Amino acid sequence: MKLSKMSKEELELYSYTDLATMILKEEKKSLSTAEIFKKICNLLELSDEEYANKIGDFYTTLTTDKTFILLDDATWDLRDRHSIKVDLNEEDSDEEEDLTETEEELDDELDDMASEDMHDMDDDSQLDDTDLDDVEDLEDDLTIVEEDELD
Image (cartoon, rainbow, N blue to C red; front, top):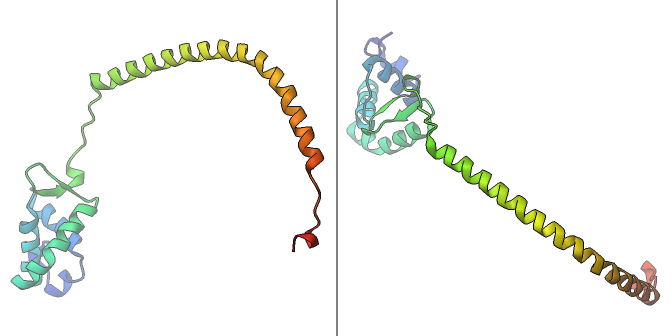
């Protein structure tokens, strides 16, 4: 049913976004925020003051509602009328090449680090004996305290 044939009472049952959707479907073209909201105000017989007070909230609603899409010419249309073009161009393949180079560099660095760590492990074995002696000294200094004694 066309919006112009509906009574004011019927129209008041719809939200502004519902009305905007119906308007865009009927018009079959994109419209600016002001054009859409002016049509809504005319349908609902809202005053110019109400138009001025509510258009900001209406714009916010359009931007957050996934039903609508803002086009390059600053007009709104229904999202389902537009497809999103995904362009997988050379930039993506360049990023993959950069990642591959980075992986190879990391592998080389890991190989270098592994040989250094193997050498360091021989030095660490001497430190381990010293560390164990320190732990044994600490155990001698520890005392068990009962919970009652803490107060």
